[in-house]
Image (cartoon, rainbow, N blue to C red; front, side, top):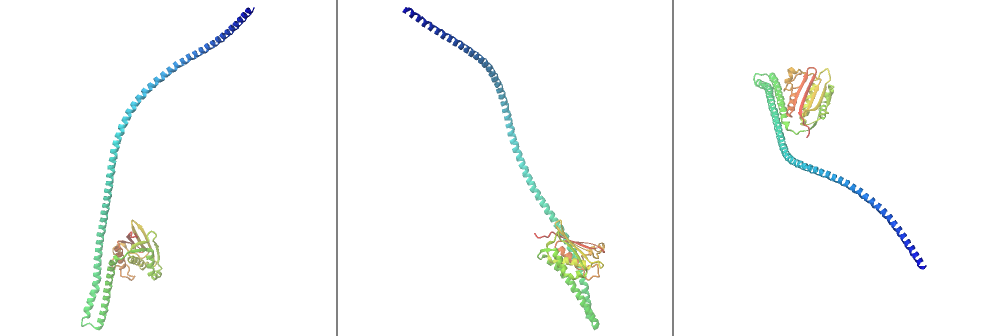
Length: 373
């Protein structure tokens, strides 16, 4: 009994063990099925990945092939670029040489241009100097010719004016020495002799006055204002201005100053203003216009009046002559305008005149621009 029970228990234990083992096997079989499925899935995945890798390898091979083709193209392009670079370097070197040559030529041209400019300036300067010298020579020649003519005229006039009183003196002296001359005749002869001596003295004084003008040319120059000069002249002849109701109009806005000989300028203004008054139209109060302006590096002064005037056709060449007078109703010797012309020309200027009978006279004086430096 105990053995049977024991056998049953052993059988039951064995059965239980076997059942457990079967369950374990079943579980392991199930696990194996699952593992096989997992393995199958993994194999499928591997196959997919292998297929993908094949595709990827093919793509990579294609890309590598493309890269090789591009590499070859790049190599060819690089070679071409290298050749082009070498050509460009050659051309650049040639351009550098050409630019250097061009720069040298430009420098040479600039040097030659500078030399030509200097030569042209020198030539212009020489031509200007020649022109100045020629103008100066012509001016000196003209001045000498004019001076010679003036000297001839002066000599002729002086000799003529000296001859008359000298001949009279000689005649009177000879007659006075005549023993047959009565006391009354001798008195008349002495009066005549005295008149001739006075006339001779007057001519000699005129000569001294004219020669003094020449000597005074070297005096010190100074600044002179035309407006003040007119006022000074009017102050000295105020009675004459008031007597004839003279009206004077001045305009020195453009040029009121000159650097010259004050004594000469005063004498010129005095003579021209007083002449305009003395030779005024008796029916009209004297009206004198005095103006100055600058023109072409010159100072031009004009004196215009409404006086008697004169005929330019018959008297133009005698206006500035010594002892020349056109209107005898006024006291004078005919020296004023001669002195004006002499003084103007001594200062390097020129004087001209325009006139018409009954319409007045205009004197125009031109000086170089003698302004203060």
